[in-house]
Length: 352
Image 1 (cartoon, rainbow, N blue to C red):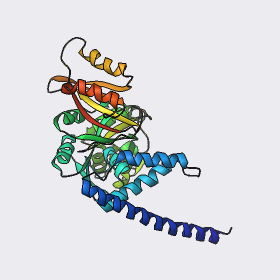
Image 2 (tube, rainbow, N blue to C red):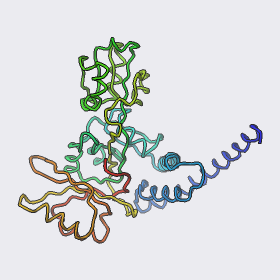
Image 3 (cartoon, rainbow, N blue to C red):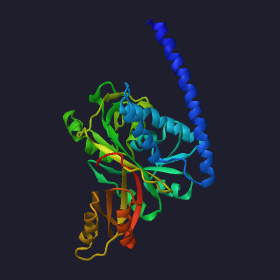
Image 4 (cartoon, one colour):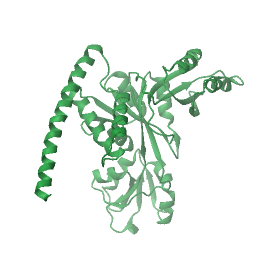
């Protein structure tokens, strides 16, 4: 087949795809109309995951699982925004890792609202300013994010999805001679994550200036030819700040997990995880007795973390299963006064 013939066939398929996409949007519109009469949420993560799982199981072509995710997650986002455009609040600023996590779930068409604090994200979702919020919950090297746990304790919101992204950092600067660099901007935690790189290149004696975010670091480095930033590559590219070194983090497996929060509960998907906040009596054996109920029911606990909120110890606990599963429901009812269910959501990834 000639090049022209191949291109004509591709054009025909594109025409067919356009028609099929429009047919899909018409059906989505009908679903949206039905949901409007019942008050059901437009965004159903468990439904989207079921579609992706079904398509991957049927796939016999060149598309990888990651390619299917990329194509269909963006189409889901387009569908939602055609029906009901919703703003998504996230821990800003623009080009932060939280922004990347939000875009991975809600696509390029959504409206994004950067918020300066985690508590602010919870507050705006709780007030109804936005329908969804995206916040970090833990990093593989620095652990649980305290502000997120405290905000869950304060606000009555639900986790409706989780996102795990790889954390890669770049060294970006206007300077063509790195020996002239006399200051480096970044978030305090990022300096620690790139300690070996900074030592190897002799940047330990250079002034390290902590700022609120790695994305802001890129903006500041753009103003000074003798400054550099440790930041995500997307932040450097967004600000036209040349990247001199990529993937400079010490731990190449560094990952951060994020929660998508809203005001509704998910239906069971058959592949769920549930998060809880648990406040137990300060008596010997109280935690063991609580956990024994999960062991007796053969429920797989995936995380147990203690945390201090206003001087009191609480536990952040996660397990595989949905809060409405029969065996789980009985345990939650037994300890109702001690448990705050944060949400059941599609299990996306192993622990970070």
